[in-house]
Amino acid sequence: MTHVVVVGGGPAGLSAALFTAKNGLETTVYDTDGTWMHKAHLFNYLGIESEDGSAFIEDAREQVDEFGVDRHQGVEVTGVEATDDGFTVTTEDDDEVEADYVVLATGANRDLAEALGCAFTDEDIVDVDVTMESSVDDCYATGAMVRAEEWQAVISAGDGAAAALNILSKEKGEHFHDFDTPADAE
Image (tube, rainbow, N blue to C red; front, side, top):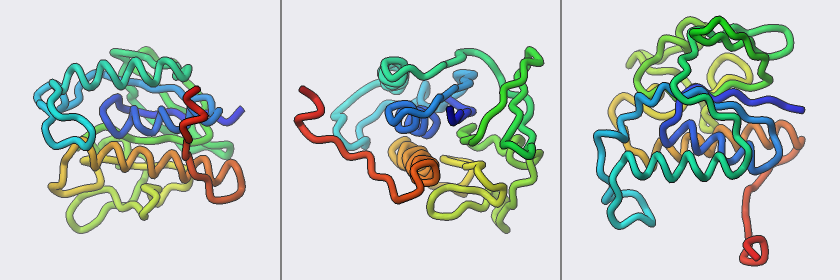
């Protein structure tokens, strides 16, 4: 089964994890809980009138857990290495996990992207295309690491969704759309 590893548990990472897990890909999230959402209160997130950032993250965690995401709370990823078959992700405990795809969602911390050899722009942000794929095939960068200043939860969540949809499109061999109908909720 295709394995996606997401590094980071803020809006971008959890959004990517939601889309990939919901659509049948094995998904692992490593989350140090360093998201800026713990300092936020949402008034500007579409569909949410007012919610504490920490409560939002808890809701998002519960949602991804319901879709079977293998979430490792409080575990730091210390390295990501490209291999012939994808990636080897190393954690602070020296555990190694093999992945077909990696989504980097570490906020403004670009260290893993730099160590992996991702290209950077003149503004010192990770250079990605519209699908959030970096210069390293099958490695995606999202959120604050790809934006000089536009750091908003809703933008980051959209970045995570874009990365996930591109991964799903690659896996399915055609453009993939995650679109549910009311009948799906019954």
